[in-house]
Length: 448
Image 1 (cartoon, one colour):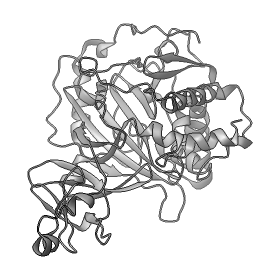
Image 2: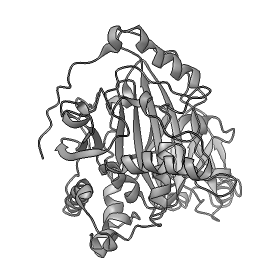
Image 3: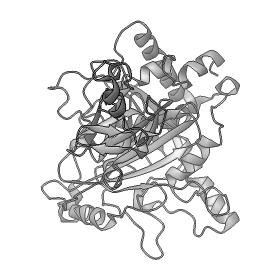
């Protein structure tokens, strides 16, 4: 179990708390670019790490992220007027630049002239960047580090998709799932098959489309550290120990990213703390074209918001991520870790909690935590251990099941509006002899 005091240290994310200060050393995805650009007001309300903010794009294309409320009479700036150099409050016309500086107070200037009052009326403003179809924000101390260019974020010849689920629970129970291989056998296999039996969801789950060993009983699990985080690996019935599921596994990038998938499609899962009891789960799906081929053009990365329950108030559990969402939320707003009874399946979770506590102490001692990048030469394309072949899958999967099919690789409820582009990209693998089975991954995994 985790001590109550440590549970609070790891779950509270407001400014000034240990985890809040750690999380403020990192960039977080806060919105799809297409969502902001599709709004004629050019604004979006954002809540991140307990702070209420508004994201906007000014009339010359620059992004801004500022406190949501005007410093004058506290009107929500999401309803404001976006201009060439900032956002103006609709109530009395005070205007704020992207850094939060108050740059215009029409009536005050009329009656007082430039008496420097505006300089005392600024609001919080934070750096924002664009990458891989998402807007990213940094809420920490200056100077801001580099926005990490993780390999799937910057690969050429890819098609991407974004799915977002707002979850009424703390970020940590979402992220701890990343260090729990055994849950897939139950939550993603036995549980949905049970639900299909009792409420008539249809046929039992077939995993052939995800590889010959997908969904089988676990025999062994292991974890190892690497430069950017931890990885989990598994052996299931039918494995020999030579599979990449065991020799490589899939990575957790510190502090709150899980990368799953294989050479045909990867998913970067970001567990972004909204506040202590809410999390934005942002799934960035990345579909690389086969080596030597070209992905179809994708003018903008589409996005969708994932529903959690159906019209009767029942959990939607016929997609794997939705099964996860149910389990995380049903642990409560903040899981009572001091009451847990941990077993052998939980060794990765224990290891990850210790890593979190070590990194908290780093920040408390005035040191930078891991994965804070400042060298542009390192940040060109940051790669990491990842499975190329998962569950023995050598032929490319389908994205959206056709009539009578229940397999596919969409993790969240629903499908992308760019489904046709995704299927076209997956089809490029059909042109590669033996489906471009890669050599065994070069990354060396420890036996930890």
